[in-house]
Image 1 (cartoon, helix red, strand yellow):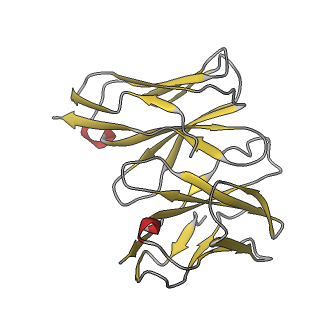
Image 2 (spheres, rainbow over the protein chains, first blue to last red):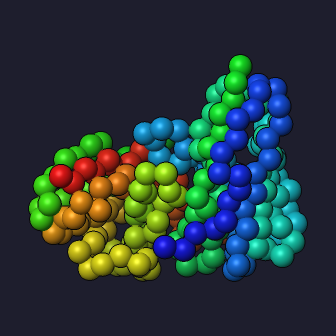
Image 3 (cartoon, chains in turn red, purple):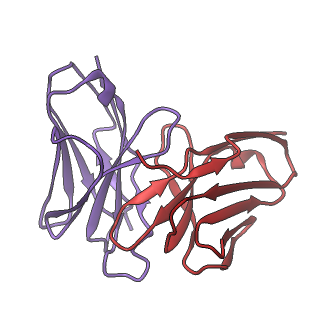
Length: 110
Length: 115
């Protein structure tokens, strides 16, 4: 099925470090979303972006909607152990379905 | 305010059998989407229901069918199960009339194992 290109696939970082991950697409999207999924759980919505160039923060998380509408990035500042999990980007156009990236698995060493 | 709920949590079926999964959307939401998530992959869109009709469908065979009820809850049915249907099935709800219709909220999922 269709997927977005998300990188990196995995990251091992020290507690307190900043993290950056990004997502690219060959198609434009009207909305970009970032989700976090813990093992055995459903994805939890972190941030939704609606305008090209938009920069939005949610606590230690910051995400941007690329100017071309074909990419987005997510930054996590001062990582903590509970940031561990899999982060997914998703693109959406009017009409329903979300297209997901392959996920970035984040591990944080205390 | 209850979030999206799904049942059952886990299910084990045999090849060739049929299965029904259930979903109740978040309060105030009118649209339900179903996704299949294989291990190590992102969720893949199966279909979406609004006003009790299938509104959009992903690249899944006709063995996958669904239904939405007047109270907005939904069912996913899979017939003639294959080993490859083993996955986490996620339900997501949203409000189609909202200018934030892209914000889909997921339930905890149903883990289906086909043996």
